Length: 212
Image 1 (tube, rainbow, N blue to C red):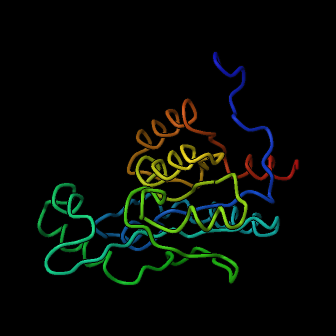
Image 2: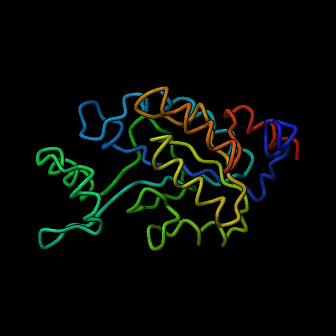
Image 3: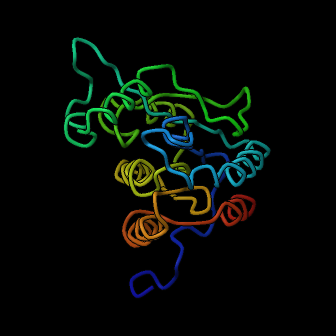
């Protein structure tokens, strides 16, 4: 407030140049008992469905961005992560098995034929070589990215921050993101709105899109 004089970065969003990226809403993070389970992710299924329905009606494209890694000859395409972040042998094995198979959008989430699904192999979909998301957005003349999914403070935050670094107007959709705890969720949103982009509820984002 001291620097901007207002809470939100953006007063209007243009549906012709906006897209939504829904990050990591897949079995590894959504399935009960999965090695990467984020229990709160199951609680954002309906808010995401409400948002995607309304966005499609406005002509806003929806991208489902799912995490996947490759494994061969005893290694992976991200050994630093698997050797140090998930170093417990059993959790490491189960995580690798989950990420090696074909990734699908979690059951209960509504997809549509015009949606696009793509894989990333780093926290951020914009890390060098991690996914084709940047190219796909620029091909569509997109300059604004809404980000939803899980975890708020890891892959959603990383993707949304990098979007801003690349010149996109970036928005974390608060009620369509989930973390392991409310404290982590809120801390990520607080830091993001201070320095990296806007934070809105799904309804707030839709209201700003409908102003255009």
